[in-house]
Length: 327
Image (cartoon, rainbow, N blue to C red):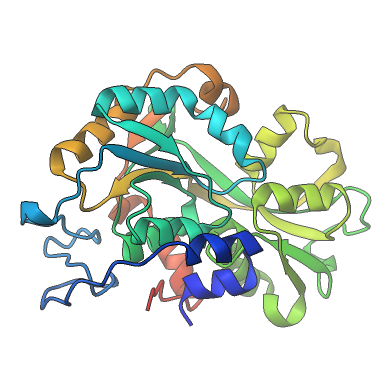
């Protein structure tokens, strides 16, 4: 079973089934005899940068009048659509195209939307970036920056302050919320780290649940619906800043090393001039307004190298036995 399929069957809401079913997949291109590494058979990677090569034949480029943009699934899509309004206007001006925001309810639906040609530009959560690259031809351009450096986050395992769970020694057999199998900090990283550092098999030693989003997992712990949750602490910080949760209600049991955060990019087969204008739109966006208020721990966008900066994420997937396959 592919990870995309597994995500749908274990971690996503009913909406994801409807959303994915609505996408009529294009007939896959005939497999070429070319280097491709872990990329889908539709793609080639002649230059070895781990990304799908853009088509050399201009007849294979897409040049839409309307660009579809989305951000990684969140608990309140309407709120986040408004947060991106200023950037969407900037992107429209930079590209000369209408830009529409498209809400998705799961990482799988987001990957499948780009794979099906229904999504052109997006912010992919850390763990879903390799799936976007391998299965949909995502070219990650930038991530958010702070003081000229890549802004990161840590995976944390949290519990309610009054749960009676005092340390990692107390978690065996308890219910832990994960986001979904495509999420780095919401499943892959904790699965690998719990096994490597504590000898805990998440499938057999814990009662697992999939919440569908970091914010849903965090709220679940705050409301005592879950004993534990594996989450991205950047999300929890933003929720606390908005007054959605009180950090005094949360106990952090474990914190990982720092991971890169959401990557923003476009699909591989856009016309080159359009792709370049999208990249420039991210790099020239003035960090202000609702986006700056929501992401107060960032000050802009910075270019990234997928091969370098997502190496740790691919290694975590490999340690978890995940081939990042879309077959």
